[in-house]
Image 1 (tube, rainbow, N blue to C red):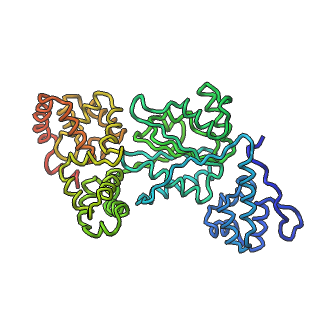
Image 2: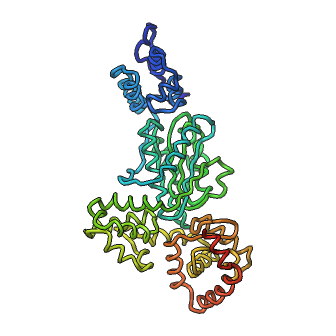
Image 3: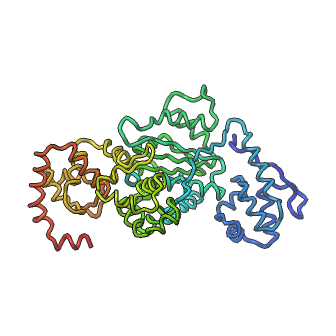
Length: 462
């Protein structure tokens, strides 16, 4: 049985005398004006596949699409009232509640245009494949993964995509013991789409199958925020190619490739102009123009990390500083930057969640990296400093890179974000005793001189 209400007869097609569905009526008006499918798609700013599915009755029209057709075909209010009536009929369909769970988007969203465009191509892939399109946005804590996912999702909905609804779930990873249980998540999702509580199955696999059944034939966006691992995501994936999934995670989610073919978008800190622009957008032009140089300095001291930048801007506004200079001065000492906070959001806590997910050898390696001089991490030098084999050091460094606590440059070399390095050094001061710190320093000096000559180091950094 179809999950959609049938397209009802809306009016007579031009010159035919026969009743027409929305799609038939659209095709008749398009051909009457001598337009190809591609030409109409260009005029209404929707892709050709989207228009084709509406004309053939495989996809219901959104009101925004119908309004665009009215303008493009110059037919007054012909299509918009029909689309409104169809949407009202769909909302009244028994057993389905159209969810609209997207959180509000950021008022000041800066940069990431290349990532927005890559996510847009996800929709084009949706038109061409039977597979459910999945995008994974990953990166270190505070880099703006959720903000990007929500910004793009609102944009896609405004353009007429996912007319059957949008589901948003905070999976609460990656800290052990805190991640949401897929059984509970599925129960929430099923109730969100209209399944009565007493009809929600108890078993994980049955809940997953029921959700897939409810989503079959529909066009729903599922945003899975802050995923812990691929196992947590697996039961939540829809089976209908009309749906799409966007996942955010601090992990690279090993094992996901065996389930789906995800598009991976690794996020890093903002570019310098974008970081300064984000501060300006939040503090206002008057404060920013009072000392543009201080804004640039503040952006660098925040590591160009969106969470730190927003916390810094909120601090300036809430404390009514006249410019960014005062806070830039306060954040001169590196450790002060970890204490950036506004309300219950603290930068240090964002890093702590990722750190607590590490096993003890990885946590020890992370703390050690905070004590090493310079920004370049050499696997061989790190092995000697940590007192482990080169294979073990490489394994631990790959794990830290997989958790986005360091960034990989090549097989032997890694970088650590400035704020994460400060956090790692702070943990080392708190948790490692004097003897261990002194041992690390003794092991560091000589291996660095042997393993990385100054000329080699300069070439790597260049």
